[in-house]
Length: 193
Ligand code: GLN
Image 1 (cartoon, protein in one colour):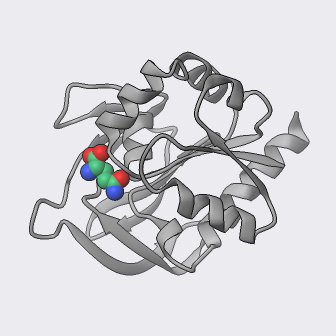
Image 2 (tube, protein in one colour):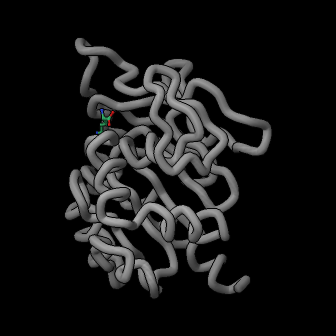
């Protein structure tokens, strides 16, 4: 199983390290050729505006969107979730726009910019470690989106078919359960194809 990690900017090395710990071969995605042989992709946290611009400038946008739309598993953490959202309620930009969610950027404001908590994620486990850094949350979901976790009345994890998103950063913790869950999504998709 080959997992790509979008490696333009942000917290991609942490994902790579965890994938290696889990005996998976990660590929750093920096141009569209890197997308060719992957079975799934992680879009990391970072700065969504910058990442959104870079995937266009580096000509990754079309191929990546096409792969996601044809069912390749993708997991967006934090800024990665913003990149996948069909709409951003406090920003006019739409990046990949493949997932039927509306997100709010920097949703926790300045005072609560960064915080840690533990909460349950449906299908993944209880007391998952959650690190939020200037995080978005999901304001609205369409019917086809499954809400996986709600913290303080805000949706912080969701899934729609091949797309998984988390507001928080599991790659900054030693709790690998979300990574393992994503790898299972990829494995099942490989079996089906
Ligand atoms: N605040 C960032 C954005 O809006 C996301 C933060 C993160 O990925 N940790 O793009």
